[in-house]
Length: 441
Image 1 (cartoon, rainbow, N blue to C red):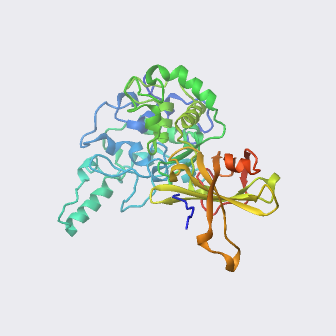
Image 2: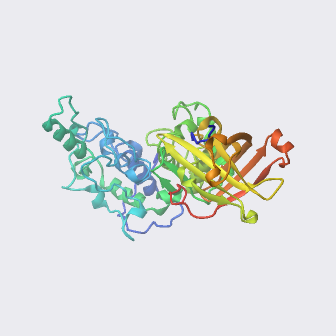
Image 3: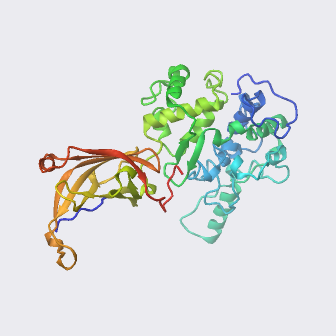
């Protein structure tokens, strides 16, 4: 029997001393110096460019244990965003994954109550936060003994190191806390300024850039403001950062979140300042990310949410049954096409399997081999040993999002010789919404 199956910078910041007025900056197009300073402090408030002293406060052993981004993520969404798989270890906290305290670290606008603002008291955590010493110093490694006491100490230290520090005990200044509130309450700094969706269920995290983004404008901005230091994003960066080049960096899990923050606001105490990058707006950053997604194939990709029935309404009476599913870590595919024979009106099925047996790990296009089957009968007359499977030709499926696709089917020389036209090509849309969540929806 022959069967077809799917194998299937703050830099020169002038510190603002006015107290924060909640809501005053919402909708502001150009960030104030205080917002920019708050963004740099969010990255690492101990740095000089961030208004810090340039050293760790007394008791702290590692800056990662007192950085805002270390627990809330570069996108402010913690485990709901780019830090979904960030691990806790001796050298750093995480965003709460695997923690005994399941309190959300997501502080984005969407996660807050309506109109709720971050306040300086929330950042300050006076009398309620952990000590600086209880950061890195809380870590207790698991021992091979598997003793109850060791496991309890490890669990307690794991959670303790993830807790919010008490910043009132020295180190961060009140001005820094006030500017952090301005930054976190600045609508144009929220992840929604750059992303229409962040899907942490995908690995790597899948980012859908805002629909106002313009890839051509992003390429032009990169060429003018970034190419001089980072060069071709597909190659090694002349400044050796990020390692492997821009596209290799963005292909890693959660890196578009980090990119959006660093490219918008700069990196404190480095030459990568907002001024050096042309003072980018959120639109500039979104434009660049869309272009870089297209260059690196790290945007919308083939995924199980595309499973379902597809058709072209102008060709009612034929259609596709497509299935994408994971076999372990490998995305597989099986498809079938209900159509008609060239010489008569009898229904005709074509089935598809991907070239090489697996779906590409990135991208939106799938190359498949098409097969036609015949040789047996309906009902009681069916005998699987009589099934004949012949290679019909090739098919190319491309999807731009969860509801729109395109297909090109090209019969081979044998089937063209038997009356099938040289190709069939048209757009596809869903007949029904899939029951499987699709990342871009």
